[in-house]
Image 1 (cartoon, helix red, strand yellow):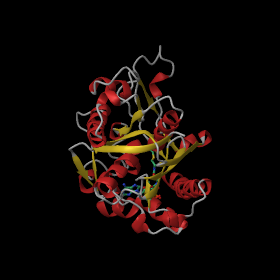
Image 2 (tube, rainbow, N blue to C red):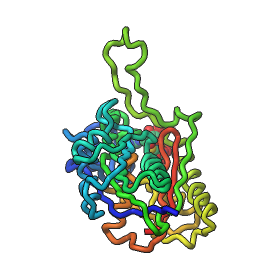
Image 3 (cartoon, rainbow, N blue to C red):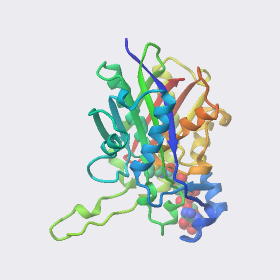
Length: 322
Ligand code: ACO
């Protein structure tokens, strides 16, 4: 039986930081509103860096942390909804930056759930016996898709990348990963590619921005997060008390605390870093896991569930023992 485990993590955020007060320059908002509704105080945003730049920096840290050489990697999957090109993908750009072997690399679009999707795919591909060592990444520059005149959305997002090295193992550490989606509610959270309609007439494409029905997404998130946790526990004959921590997608602190309350799980055991980074989409989960491990919040032997939801609508969760 082939199992999988995490052997290294890394993360990176751009240098430029924007506080809630800084946002007042663009929209009619204030720190009190943003912090009380979301738990966000500040976020990091790109200036001239692209998604691959963030992904590269996070990956180098993860590779060093894992103690492997770039040539050991035989699979690269990047979760992103903010690729730098239609093609080549961030994964291929990254392959060149890291001087990797000519291995399979591809991008996955599942919005904020993206990292759970790439974890699920890489985990199953390694467990099949076909691959040994995967570099998986969530990397986003969502602030490039943000409408900086829309206070409903621009206060929520930040940029970041998180990376993880997973390998085949004799011990069962990545115990279970599940993902799901519902395509019939796409109008709740959407960023259209408006320029591709009637290309002969509309010779110049125009990029759309993120549109969101915030309170509907909130309701969906607070339903799907506890459900995914419970589904994972049921599938693995475990109960909530068996878990040391939950590392949830950092979209909104109120979503995380409502999920904890509904699960009857202590907020002290829900990892939080949203105040410093905002919602970094697919980067949110690997950034949180990396920081939780490096700060010794998560320790070897801990059992935790990581769980996310996002545009699509999509969701995913993983049960992991470090
Ligand atoms: N500053 C000040 N006031 C604001 C701001 C702001 N930044 N944004 C909205 N308001 C106002 C609204 O205009 C509204 O005013 P009105 O009553 O006069 O119309 C009022 O505040 C209340 O707005 P609501 O939308 O009802 O506020 P709510 O409490 O629902 O919080 C929020 C909004 C934070 C967006 C919440 O709904 C939420 O977090 N939703 C989930 C968002 C999310 O997680 N999205 C996932 C993205 S995932 C991905 O894949 C990209």
